[in-house]
Image (cartoon, rainbow, N blue to C red; front, side, top):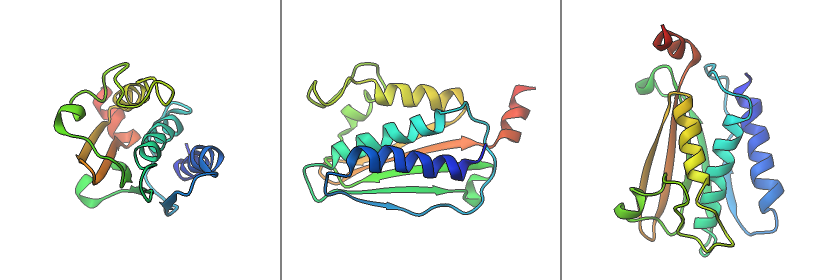
Length: 158
């Protein structure tokens, strides 16, 4: 799977198509060639679109700024790291403990169902990855998705 192509597609679909009428600064730098990761078709797009939508909704009452970073770090050998950072409302520890539960939401019913992060967590888990969350009230949040490369995943299956 061409990860760079899918990230570009996701970013354009998830951000430009849905949020062009808002005054939101989104920082995105297309990535250079990266390792291959084994994905279910559409899963990467769904993961990132859900995280981007949450970030945009969390930051909509301030001077919104969303960052999407993608990298392979030497200290995370054989992993790709997708990071979505916002300068939104942030969350306290009690809220962070609940965010991956089905139907949990801090939004008004018209804004969300409480399924976005639940689905995202399940997709990431199915890829043998993990989601790390850092957040501070009134400062914003960082959602970091760590996915193993496809060769490493094959070894775990044996």
